[in-house]
Image (cartoon, rainbow, N blue to C red; front, side, top):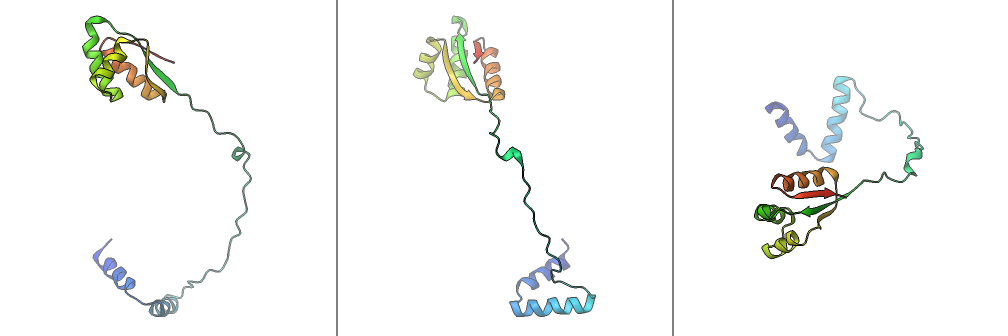
Length: 128
């Protein structure tokens, strides 16, 4: 917006209702325009059968830690702590008591991302 239009806009904001009405009349006369609403277009309701349909079901998945190799336990433990936000003892209990659900009822993209992170450090993971 240019500075000139910005100044005009600021001046318009300071007008009273009576001054605004007078300005509209002057604009109509000067520029030979009509600011009144001439035609009201009736709005007809659109009947859509999809409104009554049930929303589509979204599949959710559980990320299950299936197996933890002993030589990869510490790396897997670190990733489990990051993903779940639990403390060291809770993460250790999860890792040592496989098979164990780490995350449940999550979107496929997120579940696959978690699976790849865990598999990258040597864990065996499944999605159910």
